Image 1 (cartoon, rainbow, N blue to C red):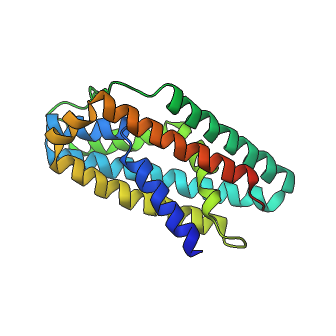
Image 2 (image 1 turned 60 degrees about the horizontal axis):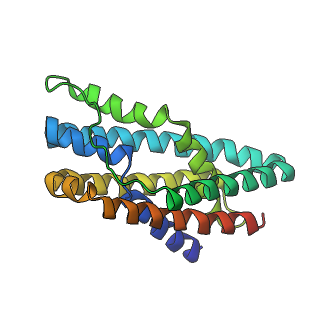
Length: 207
């Protein structure tokens, strides 16, 4: 259990630090609308992740209990998905960070920014697919899938929110660094290696 938790924390920290849509949204909101609305946006993003984590945990738990075949199909599909993502990131890393994400107007209320963060994740099925393929690797044998998935999603939310706070506090510095093509390629390729490693681990794992 300890090894699973440590592995998960290392992986999720690396993945959280890798810039993507959420990073761009928080940075852009902070620069254009101030730290308070950027923080609300980050909380919305975290809420979306938590909803996905709980939903995936509940559905995945029922699926795993129902069928050995379904478990193996899901395992191999998840491994293939992670492998595809990893190879793609290594072969075609991004060289440009697009922080020009559309955000609400300066006069928009906090609810608007919270909704933008939530919907950015809830309307992205890749978040759910990623949780399905990623989280089961760290669940100890015999443990509650729903409970562990929800707990790991909550851990991801806490780490992600803390990282968003760092981004907000250092908006101009990080925005400039993340636009560096060398940094972008390095982060993408590092994440690709992580994905491939977990794809192999998932494919070779037993129920």
